[in-house]
Image (cartoon, rainbow, N blue to C red; front, top):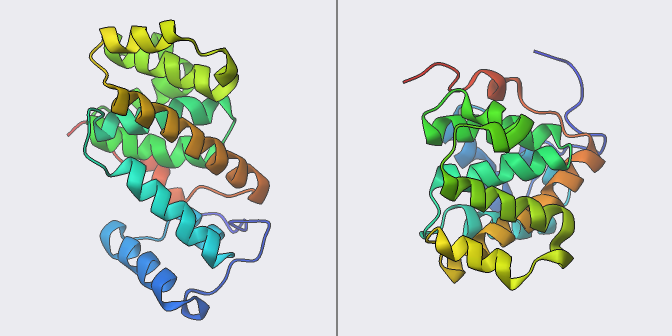
Length: 192
């Protein structure tokens, strides 16, 4: 365990937060056994906390053609491009959990093109990284390529929206010098 601060900005005490924000944080703590630092860091500005997590929940927990592992894979690949230590570590842990593969998150974070993924997932990550780095260059051919792998227009929207949300998240994590929780590093490292 490190004594480094979790953010370069003030982190409010949980008991000082508005009821709804505090309740959401305590609910996460109850389900995970700890409070991910992103919750405490973003609670510095409760209105933005609410907006961020509402959009996060709308994208990351919705039903659709992307699995939970697919969604986390997008986060890890694009967060790696954005050099976001917090998101690569925390969402890498979630990718290991949802994929039930202790190696996949590290593979995707370093070079998803060499990872043990399907051609469909490769096409998904190629598109996500295009949107993350050069969205203005996306053409109908890029959309058509995704469709050949069975992605619907709603799935394509999800890929782009997850990429965009995490562009924001990555930059906020870097701005705040958000430190990943120590718990994330060891999560789901052993095969189930």
